[in-house]
Image 1 (tube, rainbow, N blue to C red):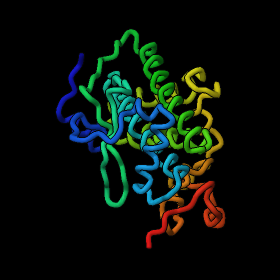
Image 2: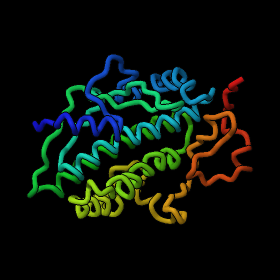
Image 3: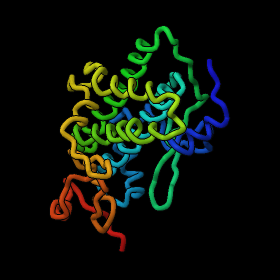
Length: 261
């Protein structure tokens, strides 16, 4: 088993909200696979999103999970040729607030990574990425049943962070030494990842990659809404929302926004 340097653990914490120490774990990832447990958990944390709606809370929590689960694993794979063991019963969320936003850390009990084989990297990449997205697929299906957020919205909540990682974060100068691998891994995720990893037999990263609207500054406009406007009393949409102000002024699906007064 390969050991991560202390500096790398600090980088993961500061940039991808992953930690290997926690006094209190809010929830283990495998617990979120249970419909009843997830329903109760969303009720418990909906105040973190300033809403009374588990519909809104479900969408917002999936955004956090998309970031917490996919990004550390993909980052370690592409930059360091490492495989992160993302066993759900050893991983959990730790409450963390940045400014006025609830942005939980991912806690990994006995953080475990292995070096990828240079000769078998493509095969190991396939196995690793399929495992990651199969796990996320199971979460999407449970969240869809419990919170009633449509699966496309939940999947785009995840996909946007994968795009950001490869189009923005890993384009920083500090990663110039792995620029070729960044391009190759991103190409694989968009065009090579098997649709068998997804319930709908469709590579969801491909699905939301094409037909996108990109602003002059490079901002990618979503195709679906994450319902962030339901998590704040002034009905403010996120910067990549496809909804018009008129759309955001309409009632939320199923439930209502929590009053801040």
